[in-house]
Image 1 (cartoon, rainbow, N blue to C red):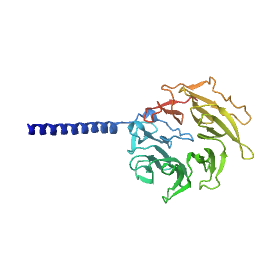
Image 2 (image 1 turned 120 degrees about the vertical axis):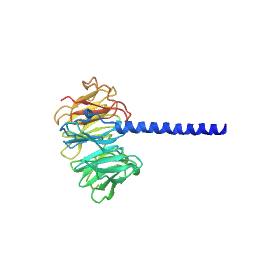
Image 3 (image 1 turned 60 degrees about the vertical axis):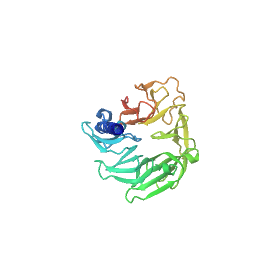
Image 4 (image 1 turned 30 degrees about the vertical axis):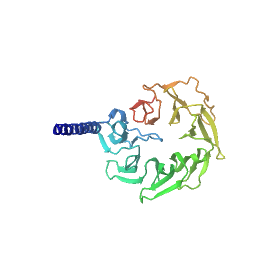
Length: 328
């Protein structure tokens, strides 16, 4: 009887191991055999807007993207969409395409900032950090925010690998525009500052709380944490005059001087930016004319790349990705 019980226990143990291995194999097989939908990423020859997006970039010939359904792996696809190639099997959070290199961040056990060439070769780790947010590249320097150091504004020299800190203040968001750095400083009431790429001559640009900001030919558009949208026009004396565009928008982006925004109903709207001598649009959201009524609604972040609006079908970042064409 004792031997029989031991035998049954061994059989049970081996059965449990077999089931675990089978489940692991199925998960691995489904994960590795998944192929992204080319229709979702086909851009043709169009280029991203100035803002770009953190998961989708193109050089005009190939499109590089992070597919969340495939475990955040990085793929490349030709303009025709009939050739999809796995570029990196590492889980990526952001990608940045610059010259012949693709820069990306991840948060796995070897988290940090990496770069690979556009064929997926010559992988190199540039920064070791649990999470970094990419800003951009200028003058051979990659700028980023380091969460391990309270989102300090830092840069790494792409030739020497040397890392420098421009400010230890809590920064974000940040952008490179016309050769200068623009940053929201959380240590200074979230006001918008501008500085040289080496961190010198930093000065306050917009003395109000800024949650997001965008550059346009009409001036700088900002959104507050309360959802207020303002246009800031630079005057002859260098100061900025503020015009209220909307009292509230849930999410917002700028495309070719067009203000695209969503409300809490998940519907997309648009507003033209006023010229200098033009009367500003009404600062209310009373019955605006819908631009798009997507299904499912746009309740989370959205991103514009080329002529397409991309969004996820919920606030969950692992949700399915959708896209819809923007009206001309």
